[in-house]
Image 1 (tube, rainbow, N blue to C red):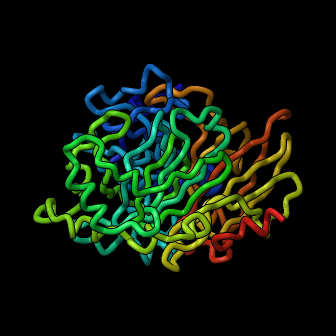
Image 2 (cartoon, rainbow, N blue to C red):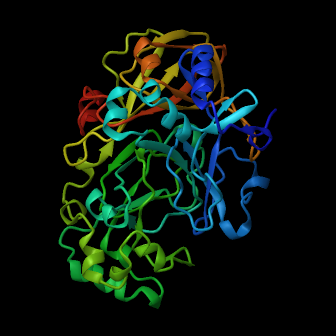
Length: 421
């Protein structure tokens, strides 16, 4: 099998190559795996990456605990490699970033509305997979991120059962702050940064994580994700601020708290705490306003498939992204229509998508090409994509995520209660 390292980077005629690929593949682009390390976390070993390759970037860079899907967003890592976080399109023996493909082909890939509004693919998704919890942190809103030339970052979670056969060390997520918590209490935690555990989790509450469910998380909302492998559709930004000084005995440097704040504000506790969405953090109805369970797609009419909303709802009255989980029965074939472009990852089984092979790998070597990830153009999605499960024994399961305002018909938060009845 070919590896990414073997392929020739194309620096010209990208548009023509993209057009040829779309013609051959029915509006689809094959994507190579995009691996991202985090120096302050321990990999959870459920990404299907070969264990010998967990530190493929070098021990100093940390273990690989994330795989990004259909990403045109660079990873905000120190000492990062060129194009880290960017997905690559694979076209025979040539490759180039999806970012470059979108720059060259624009509306032909993501649709006129998204292209005219954003001039790029403004979202991405990932699996993040850790042995233990992530530090209590938040992602800046558009207002605060703009101060350092970045974009804000709302995000969402779904815990795919196929990647969660074990829960690892702490399958609970701390979210928000206990109602009644004061800003002064949070500032005191920041003052205690160098004393060891700064006690920020004493002000929060943990929720048990359940495979097959999820959460919708707005910017400025504190959260310390637990140890389930998580599918995470989100805005195309990598801004964050860590508010916890010690996690499982590992130091979290102050620099990770203030990395996306103006330098002159790096010791300004009022400014730092002021970036939190206070009302969202101390909301007494926090779970009701953020928790997700799958909801059947109402317009799905295929008898041999099940299509479900797994990410839906609005953040501050805006739909930033949505996601669906498609399950095709063994031996079945279905044509699925969607309203916009999407990134797709297969989590189980094998089959075809407009004739393009799909196969969920058992184990992946770093740099190896797979057949489990695809980008689908808006025109192909609207015309209808034909999925075929070529297995006679197991379902074909795929997750796909969409950009902002693509699915105005998506359910509202809380719709899972009615679906369950």
